[in-house]
Length: 73
Image 1 (cartoon, one colour):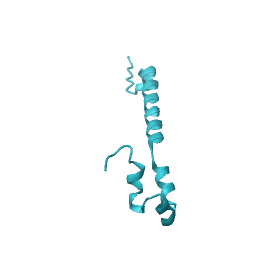
Image 2 (tube, rainbow, N blue to C red):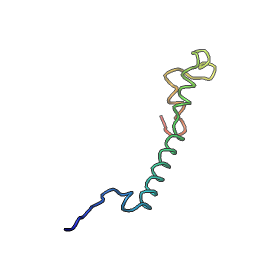
Image 3 (spheres, one colour):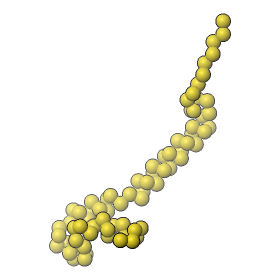
Image 4 (spheres, rainbow, N blue to C red):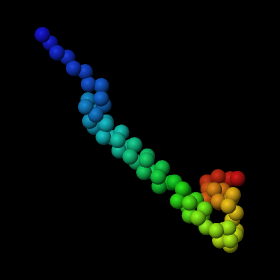
C-alpha cells in the first residue's frame, strides 16, 4: 500500500521563497505606514480655528495642505 501526500503550502514546499515573500510584504507595509500622513492631519485637526488661521489654513484645507507636495490641486 502506498501513501501520497501533497503539500500545497508555499512555506512547506519552498521555505526560501516564503521568507522572501514575507520580507517583501513586511517591507511594503512598513513603507506604506511611513508614508502615511494621518498623524499630520490629526495634529492640524486638533488645533483651534484661530491657530489654523495663524498658519494661514482653514479647516477644510488641511488635507490639501498636508498633501500639497504630492498633488497639484
